[in-house]
Image (cartoon, rainbow, N blue to C red; front, side, top):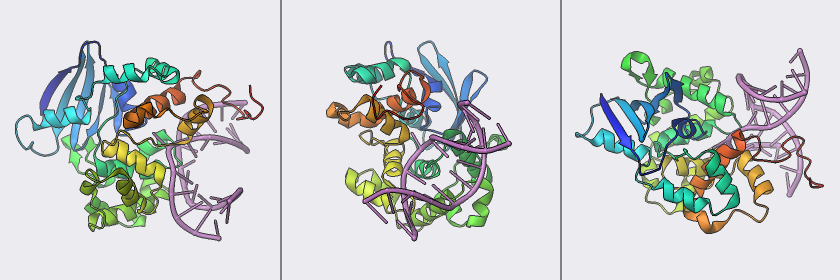
Length: 290
DNA sequence: AACCAGGGTGATG
DNA sequence: CATCACCATGGT
């Protein structure tokens, strides 16, 4: 058990609600004024402080060395990235300026690659509430209990590979269950070595992921962005496509290409939750203009 | 090259 | 209570 307090750069703020509940991670929930959930193999309880946030951490296994836990969690929240500078850069674009002003506390997390692969396989043609339910049942059923069973680790590929579609039925993942099983078998057998994706050129990494049954370009980009720290990946879901069509008829500016995925996260949350973000949302009859 | 199923849930009316 | 949309993809 460990307790850390993080103080962020001058004037910089993280909103745990915006970061942990903006559709990038599916295992956190608001509890007693803070947020609780699993960050990789660690249970964390996070709470905001005037200058940043504090983390209470229970590790599933012993830490490699003193300080490794804190180091890993700082990496998870990508605390090395200067978000104040990044948001200033985004704000040169009028649309992104609105998105950043609307949800200034968003950060893109660096999640576990395997968990991100499974999570975004399960996310396809699905809504966030149900994705959370499926992942929660997946971990409760096949993960290892932590802290007396209140939380569970994310099941590893070997564990899932040994299961059948019938075993997965209680998850109510629908047609996505067979994709999950295929991914688990390909990873467990070594046919796809996830750790090689980090050093791979982006196109090769994309190709490796889309070679999996049920993984297309959108899911692959989510996995690379959220699970492998590829901040240049720009997943295009229905919300982002809508946003691009209505707010960027000329296309998304490539001035931000190195961090397009982070811009995407601001846009996604803005368009999904701010009623004024997208005009004429009902009917979708924008052919004749407003 | 356009549809279409697949599964279930929350939002909407 | 019915309809609809949903952080897509593979098959036809």
